[in-house]
Length: 78
Figure 1 (tube, one colour):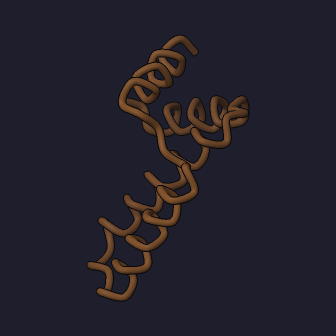
Figure 2 (cartoon, helix red, strand yellow; figure 1 turned 90 degrees about the vertical axis):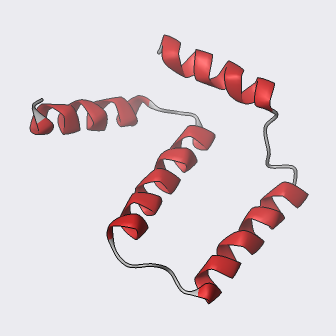
Figure 3 (cartoon, rainbow, N blue to C red; figure 1 turned 45 degrees about the vertical axis):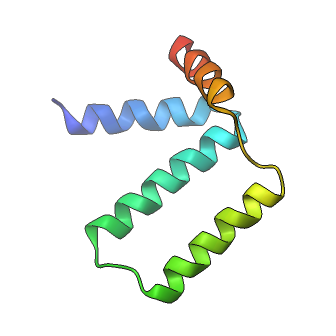
């Protein structure tokens, strides 16, 4: 595996992405990776994240299982 080549490819592909939901998912994965690789979060931070998630649900920013499946199929075609 050539890490440098993989990173370059990822950068090029990300420049093409126009779907804000997909970008948000990538951001969340990177944030999660950063947290996991450092130390545990505080109870306060945990509660803030839970509250943010609940707010997203209340605002209707959710997808059904079927919608997620369709989005994955679309991403796989790209």
